[in-house]
Image (cartoon, rainbow, N blue to C red; front, side, top):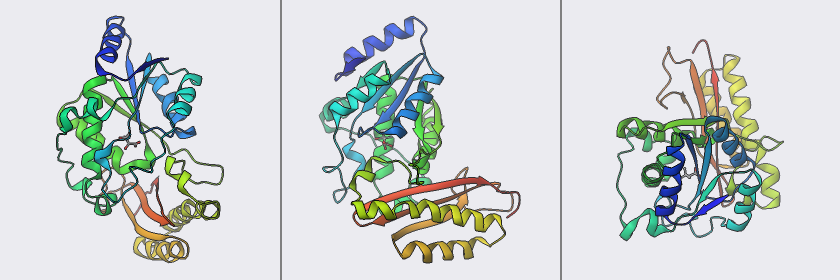
Length: 281
Ligand code: PAF
């Protein structure tokens, strides 16, 4: 596996691969790699000839009061992990490589950046857009792979690519779950062993809400029931049932529905969602 800390050598390597007509897929990560990242890499391999994984804990997507400093930094384990799954190149830039002289461009992440997670994390999606646009500019990937657990992030990145005319195809993979249903996340490492036993109840409740809606319970009642049940264990930040294509309110023509939620369990913030089709609303 090639390891790059600097943009120049990475660009040289990628240019020579392009001259050989090899297609490139990028998997942007913040490290703390787990089974979910493995699935991202597998998807990237299926799309393209060569896979680059970036590891960069992006400071601009964390607010002052968030977990930037505590975010798991496991670079030597991550390197072994990526070698074992035969990734072609790992890119671990410094802050200065990504934001020379501290500069970072602002992006209009639109209305979609202001709802759901954007309410409690108002600068978050702008920071994600900054780093993703910068990584795309450096790697110029044919494909980039993201997880559907961060569903709002995924739609914002798709819209960024469209609006900026970036020639990268955005590919996504379904949320990878532990056997008990908990969505895999680097932040699950923050859960105490007691909280870890409660955490799967989050997804179980989303699934129960989906079943309720599918069996004809109206959406506002289903949400109220979900808030009541979740509140026994979690601090509920939001739970909404929306049009999965654009995160707007459901209309009679919406057939793809998302139940999307963020909760807190102790100090740990968990997000999750379920997307499903529905023939009537
Ligand atoms: O989803 C993540 O891990 C991050 O938000 C991303 C896309 C790597 C940008 O820092």
